[in-house]
Image (cartoon, rainbow, N blue to C red; front, side, top):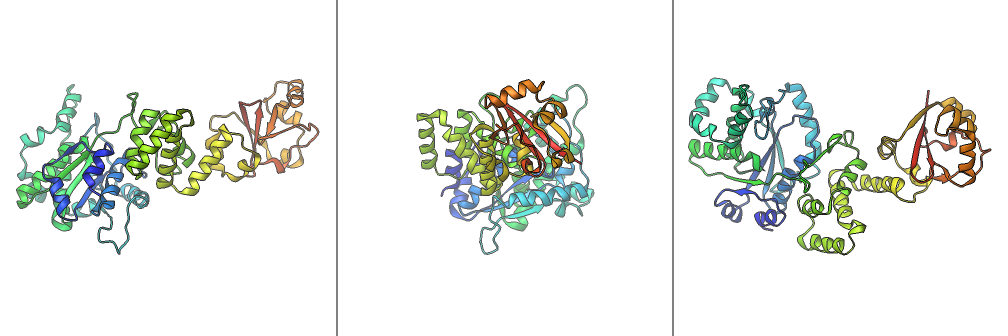
Length: 432
């Protein structure tokens, strides 16, 4: 597998330094991407960098992830209009540990592999570096003119032309990132840095620093920034980021995000966010184009990436959950999903709290749905719906109004799903 050609057909190649292809052809290359651990989870905006490393390793090269414990304390100005909040070491270490667990699903860290993946924290090689050492050994090799010419700096200064300006802390970020590349070059034979196209300036600062400090040669590859066909920001929803941490974004919501992508975006994303071959992808796209209403493309994309980020079990639960909301599922399907998935499926559905003792003793259906809750405005309305076969409880038609609603009706020991007709859902939650 040719790494650069793989990136190219997948639409993941933006800028490349001359002779990078020659280097990759002649030896096993160690390459890295940097991730600032500014949160305790990665989000899907980080997936492109991880997929670049995954393809790199599959091509026989060695991937490194550098978590920016040091640079994360500074804040990268690239693509930003405001300075980031600076984080303390305790928070950064917590974030680092969580992120390492997520990276483990993408890369092979097996000790018996010559090109096994590694994760480092740049705080570990910068924490004992004094300011005087840094300006003497690093700062003197790059001029202010060189640093000011970077697009990330010029753009940041233009955005703050009102006078707020750019702090020295932010301005020094590219030096710190350049120092990371120099450190990895000298200590781990790392000759290639990769990242998003907005990182080109920071990455080439590193290649220049390596050239001036050691006389050696280092290389750079960037991928395009991912966009949506409608111009919206990739990975953002009304609720915010789509996180890889299942406690922040449930696997069901994660699955639904990919399932709901447009045809145009799905054709692009399936190349970027899966390891399916070009032939497999072309076949899926052809099937999809023949029967677009079946959304075969979106389903395959959602399945592949949910398994990669979460697990096959999470995928199966997400599919079951989707059938509950959109398909003809039964009460058995409801019983199989966990509480978190159940709440994700019915997020935003009106919920009524009822004392658990009322259900335990057995509640009259009319008392429960008309008086204890206002799901029905009158007993007559409820009676007519039952008679017309329009009331469902936990996905089962309810036709026996004298039946008491007891603990046997509870989903996850706590919830009852009420449906008026086909589309109106309500949840009763027991408390106490």
